[in-house]
Length: 195
Image 1 (cartoon, one colour):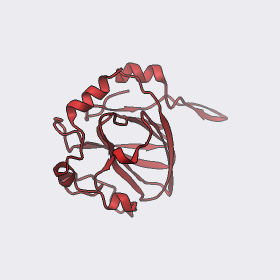
Image 2: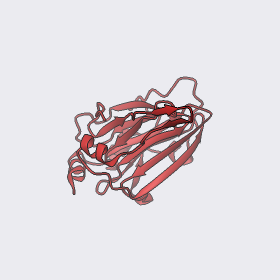
Image 3: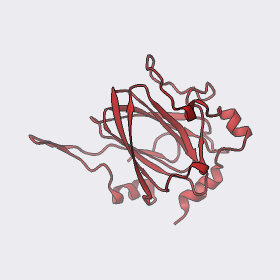
Image 4: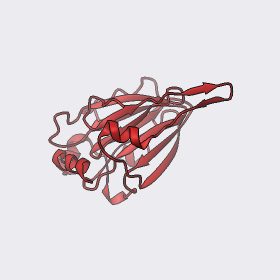
């Protein structure tokens, strides 16, 4: 499971075993995950979203502590998964990385506490599963507008962007910084190292 360019984000592409019946793969293996990430993933909640083509979900992040780490896979269709470093004080603050997830490559991404997360559905319909380290708490969730020019996320050209009202009203990166809405890098590192 190689770490991506943003510290705290990994991609896992499992071996797929195919025969005349179809195929099989392990989309999450605790021992392999712990060996690669150097930490445990305690699962407090599992989510499933089904999105239409062009739907963008995010960019979302939770307050740290406690934060919310996510392990994300696209089980049907195709998405462009985007991870944004929203940890103030991080050497890669404001940078993002995109990973294609789909029902062909079966890749998954792991996103540590403090990293922002969002995705765009590229297929007519896309089903995404998330394992989350903490339960959803709306009072601790923050968002950044996914089309903020300061982030400069390269969403696929020609994609009809469909945002929720909440994501469309999300602040810019600058507004979130001014409002002290973003997690601190040191607090995120401490959250990563807690037992």
